[in-house]
Image (cartoon, rainbow, N blue to C red):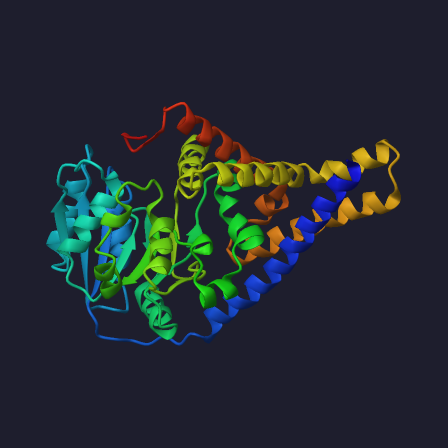
Amino acid sequence: MSMIFSVIVGILGLYAFLLTLSNIRYLSDLQNTIRLNFSSELVSVLIPARNEEHTIGPCVRSLLKQTHTNLEILILDDGSNDETAMVVQTLCQEDERIRLIPGKPLERGWRGKIYAMQQLYEASRGDYLLFTDADTVHNPDSITYGLSLLKGHNASMLSGYPKQITRSLSVELLVSAMLFNPTLFVPFRLQERLQLSMFAMAIGQYMFLKRSALDHMEGFSHIKSEICDDVQLARSCTKFQEKQIFSPMGNALSCEMFPTFKEAFHGLERSINGVVTQGWLRTIILLVIVIALILLALSPLLPLYLAFTGESLLLILLSLAGSLLFLAAWMINAHFFKFSLSSSLLAHITILYVVLMYLHGHFLILTGRGFTWKGRKIS
């Protein structure tokens, strides 16, 4: 058994390191080779807002400072019970490009945010649509950069990780779970070529689309009941043969997703389980993955255990190499995506959190409790 554990850790570590080197090279090329092209197309910036009175102001003001000036900013008040609508109404008086849309009552069969996005899509006029969250703050070239990437790669959808703002190391350890994708999961260069559904990636903080692509997919109706709208939309693009790409967006915008550890844990467990499709075969595969991740999370202790039990030096070195290679890969990605050195050094704890968030979220699904997000029950 010790040999099996050592081999698994060694393979995972080597795989993570090689995948990371490939991904960083591809993503760096994506950033460095694109040229900013200033255009005159109308871009619709679409923001679903539910109880965002403290964040919607800084978000909209950052969008008003864009170098791409031909835009409309539509904010949908999604049943807020705070001062979100009043804040937006004040902003509307400052710039005619801003428009407040009162949200309709949630229709049966729809998830709240997805229904809000559908209403924004229907109300927009632009040939390009940027869906962004109310807790983002955009740099002046955010729209120009995204539009240049979209056009430069002849893509229908662009998404990418903004720079993540966190108030504590404990929250950052949870939020940095997003590094799981470039470290252990998505081969980005291969994905751009093959457009495989399982590797399609997106994050709702920044989703830039051609209107024609959403028209082709008939808006969001095909994913109206999904928990995780962003990844499911990216997967839909691959199924509808609409090219989607994923790029680092840390130079374009920043986002504070979760102020507290509790909010981060519950928000991320919902997202993690939302991207996992159900079924017996997938459950078995996921069980194997969970066991492998637990072993990877505990891998720093494995060499000590092997030495204590008198195992061979080869197995000790193999497990140590695997753990260190994984840590090196995680730290490279953390630096690239602008996470702190402190959180990257605790990568193994983050992997353990990923497992805990998946298992707890899966428990909520199996027991019928579901998730609660911004006052809405998500079964």
